[in-house]
Length: 211
Ligand SMILES: Nc1nc2c(ncn2[C@@H]2O[C@H](COP(=O)(O)OP(=O)(O)O)[C@@H](O)[C@H]2O)c(=O)[nH]1
Ligand SMILES: [Mg+2]
Image 1: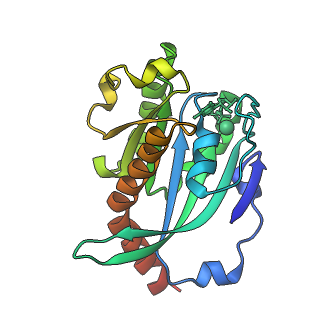
Image 2: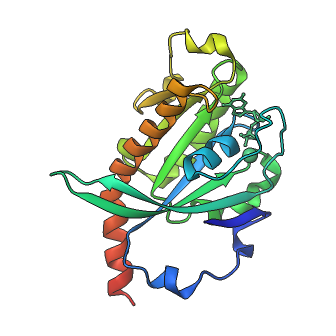
């Protein structure tokens, strides 16, 4: 479900439906973070299965944050699948929305870090986003995934070298209008959700016991 559209700030979100608040499904809050124009919104829509404009040239910068809600079945080990309620927070890379970040970061379980490797400055930018916003969350390595997202066809053949400060995270070469690299988006996201699952389950248990 598309929950919020271009919310200037998360504190302005409408109240959640009671059914969602009472759901016993574990819930994972995942942030999509990276420089402006690297493809966060297109990626978020693709991962959420939201119908996107087929015109990939059209750019519509995200204002503040947008939240997409959907369910995902996640492999929990031993052949068991767990249904996870995902809240995907598609953030704006624009510094003018800095005052929203406390609300965006609160209780996040996982992060998709996105940058375009064909734009040289974005390696440094994504490192800066990581240091400023992700490091304070003190997440485990498996709660972060790196998407080198490019719509430059030559990027496909280039060897992927993650930015130095992000070498510990799994990296996926992604693009939504290329079959193989679109598959990599799904694989990367599945891997992240698997890493996030234990924390999300624990947080949901704590929430329920506090009801
Ligand atoms: N062809 C193509 N264009 C893309 C892809 N991802 C993003 N874009 C385009 O790149 C521009 C910026 O994308 P957007 O998702 O708005 O970036 P954001 O600022 O990080 O949210 C838009 O014109 C998108 O349509 C992709 O995988 N393939
Ligand atoms: Mg955007």
